[in-house]
Amino acid sequence: QVQLVESAGGLVQAGGSLRLSCAASGRTFSSYALGWFRQAPGKEREFVASISRSGGSTYYADSVKGRFTISRDNAKNTVYLQANSLKPEDTAVYYCAATRGYANDYRRAGVYDYWGQGTQVTVSS
Image (cartoon, rainbow, N blue to C red; front, side, top):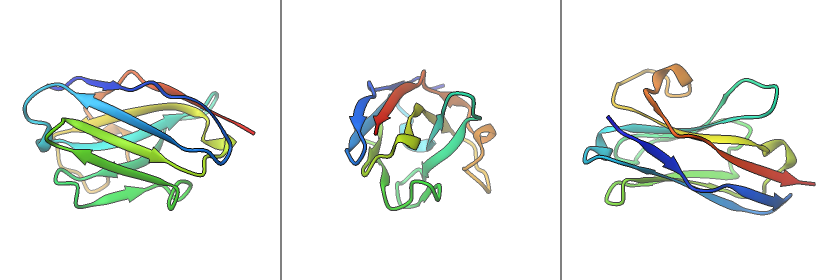
């Protein structure tokens, strides 16, 4: 079992940048595939990015591709989301997620077994 704790989000102006981190408990962090999701008010939770156990494979939602970067440091039990060129439509609660399972599609929220508590990111225009 793993517990995930996201860093504080924040308020940033459009065009700005923010780095989110998510620290995990436990000694088997490298055995988990990880993802970032977000949920805006009145909308369903949506996939943002995912990263494989080794960090060698990453996937992004089209809406963030080229602007966001997911990475992980298995020695520090931490996954990161670097968000650049932020837009007001990026405003949402961001969640990190983890799974020890294997799936064909890590973009589905149902694949993940563990979730962080969420952190608010607000982008002002």
